[in-house]
Image (cartoon, rainbow, N blue to C red; front, side, top):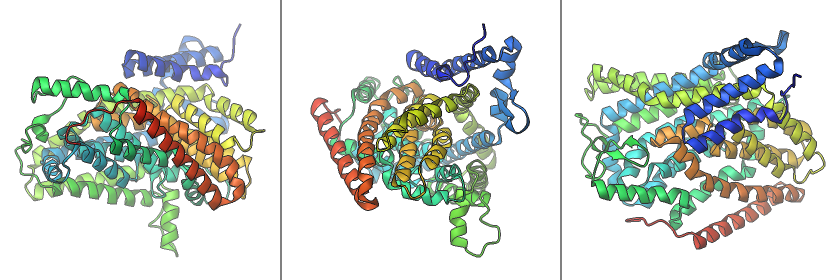
Length: 547
């Protein structure tokens, strides 16, 4: 007897199995691939297509007819223009980072920062501030902050696991509250009808409790010198290793080279790159990246087409932009200008600049592989109807709980993003539902959309198959599973506080927009403060030298 598993709870089995295996085996590649195979097997079993159908669905399958044709599989994911653009952006960004390191820019910035960043606490605060300043795109944020701050945090004994957490917590949470970002463009694109999606996005920012509380929580734990046991154990191991090796070259915690000689960590000497780099060799390429990625995004949104009102056209261009195309345009322009700058100034010979491109690509291969597998797993999950199943559960269970709807949507969005590893996919599923459930004038509409965005970022934040989580691990040169496991308690703490704050917001919305925000924020800050006091009291803080 054949059973149709599509659109049932079985549709969530592949991502659940992949996540469980990743956490158990601490090996991401095989876990993702097993989840992909399981998804293809469940689909072919439901459709009754046998082994041939299984193989076709695994690689490149076309399902449906007419306007409902959809494609799934590994080859389709690699051929998708959006995904290709992201992969090209990662390769180019890796090349720029390699260029900066080869030219000595990272080492020079490390020397400059060592004069201003004197403590372990200061290194962490500097990482957070830099992450907040790079608000255009989460991928760009993760890799740029990682490459810039890694030598500085290493110098002050901040583990790669802690750096990965700081990077991850200032990537998506910052982008999802920034009107000028690829995330704002994505969210506004999911708002149907004639409504201005970007204006709705801006109204939802004050209610995005998870993103805002995450930023506050990071500053607080650095200020009070607190870490969960899952994080502090890596700090203890790092200090033990450092004392034992006394400046050795291998980091036994993460299994990767520290490259202490290049960055001058430990001994405090200049990086041995063979070139006299300056701080400008790091700052200028990053500034060019920010400027040209912004220009590239608004260009893809039609900014340079004739318009009578350039200001509003600029905002509309961001709302209509194609982040994949815009980031490729901006990064390629920055790469070409960076190569020209280094060769003209004779900071790098042209042949060494070209060899850095290969080094940058090699550095991005692990992240590209994981992203490809994660995208394919999402494709398998989509083909099994996981999105429709979760949407039906939300619509049926929340219809009679209007005031609790924001909290319910927050939880469901977090679970869906956790299982699928994508917050943008969660936006596409739940935001249209929130728009349809409430009329434009309903206060709960804005709060529910905020809850959707907050929950999606939360689930994306803690999911092992999330591309942002993967990028944070790559940016910090940290083992991916170490990052996921050490970050989990921090994210769950903020998620719990955010959940109860959304409950309060659902009831406080009857007081009016301003009063509702005031009551919700007061409650949320009190809960966050109480959580910090409780954690500080019941967990001994990590020992930090020169804090």
